[in-house]
Length: 189
Image (tube, rainbow, N blue to C red):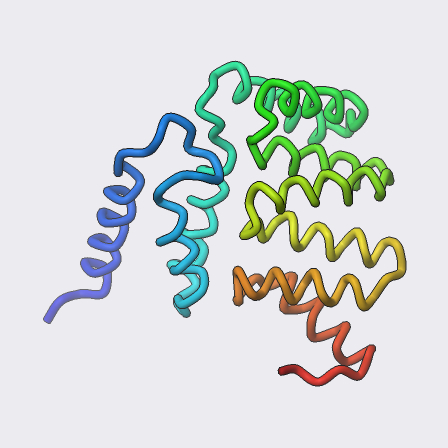
């Protein structure tokens, strides 16, 4: 009889082998590993598989393939985490200037705008993020939060439902969808 630990160990070995697969020069939203990771999000039921796929997607999304852009991203994230929101907005603006097709640069600036209360600017950058990466469950969920902040519960519900279309087990989106459907008295489909 095989022990469950041995099975789990083999699973992690397979996961790390997956990460070692060759990638394009830019491991951004166009990375060849993403379709299979999104399939895991869509179909998996085991929390560890879902969590692993989500973490790897975020890792890939943060890789621009350019050292200068990646350094700026790290700086902007540090600034945002330290509450220096206007500095982070400017830093992410430089990321966007250098790599306008890098979806995560737009998403990070959208987040900084949201935290700064600049909701219309955040919506604009979320739109650009989603134009580049329609599966960006972080941007979709962020859009839901923006709509909530604006008092638009129907818009929030649509955004959170779109999040679940990509990432069906996203806990925050599931919570918001259930709460908003109950409040708005909308049946689940």
